[in-house]
Length: 340
Image (cartoon, rainbow, N blue to C red):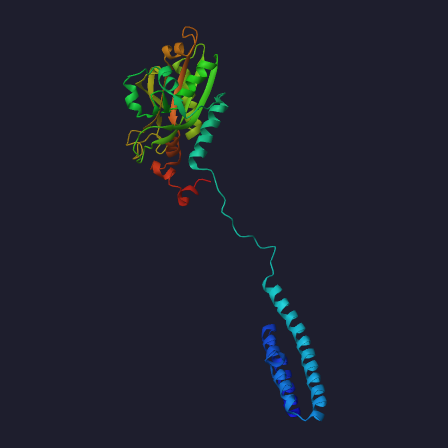
C-alpha cells in the first residue's frame, strides 16, 4: 500500500504540472482527492491492514493529501492568472477605433417637401393654421359655396360620418373657419391630411395631404396671386420655373384657374414626365368668390382675396422625380434612405 501511495503521488504530481487549464486541473483533483477518488479508495482499504500498521499508513495518506492539495493550489493560481491575462487580451478594446455604425432615422421625403413649402410661404409673411379633420358639412361645403345637392359634392367622393359631419375632403374648411373668426387682413396657409373615396393607384390615395393658402385684404388682385405662385415655384424648384394659368371653375373662387408649372425635369423642353408639353399641372387657384366672403361675414365691397390649394404628395413627386405615389407609403428603407 505504501508503494501504491508513492506511485499515485508521483503520477498525480506529473498530471498537475501538465494541466493546461483550470478545468483540466479540477478533473485531476476530483480523480485523486474526490469522494470516489484514488486516495479515498486507499483509505477505505486500510481496514484490511494489521492494527499496528494503520497509524503509520494514515499519516502517510495525510501527507500525500497535503502535498497534492498544495501542488493543486499553486498550479491553480498560476493557471488562473494565465487565463485571466489571455481573456483580457482577447477582450481588449482599442478606443481609437471608430464605433459600430448605428442606423439613424431621417425625415420622410414628403415631410422634407412640406417643410420647404411651409418655409417658402412663412418667408412671404404667411401664418400656418390648422383645423379638425372630422369636419361639419357647414364648413367643408356650405360656406365654400357648395350647398346641399350641388353637383360639385359628387366630385369630392366624400366620406360621411353622418348627414352633417364628414371627413374633410380638402383643407379649405380651415380657411372658412379663419374667415368667420378673424377680420382682414388675413394671410394664412393650411397644411393637413384630407380624405376622399379614391382608389389607391400610382397617382391617387384615399388619404393624402394638401396645403391651401388664403389672402384677404383690400385691393388684392389676380396679379398678386400670380406673383405669389411664381415666387413659390422659383424657391421650390429653382430658377427658370414659371407658372401658367388656364381658365377653370371652382365654386369658392371666381375667376378660377388651373395652374401649371414649367416641368422641373426638362425645364420646359418636353420629356416623358410632362408628356412632351413642357408643363405640369400642379394646383388650383383663383380669386375668392364674393359670395363666400359675404357668407363668412367679410364685406366683398371692401375686401378681396385669393386662394390656392396644392397636393403635398404631388409636390414631393415633382421635386424628387418620384414616378409612383405608392413609394411614399410603402416604408421601403431602400427608397426612404435616399432622402436624408
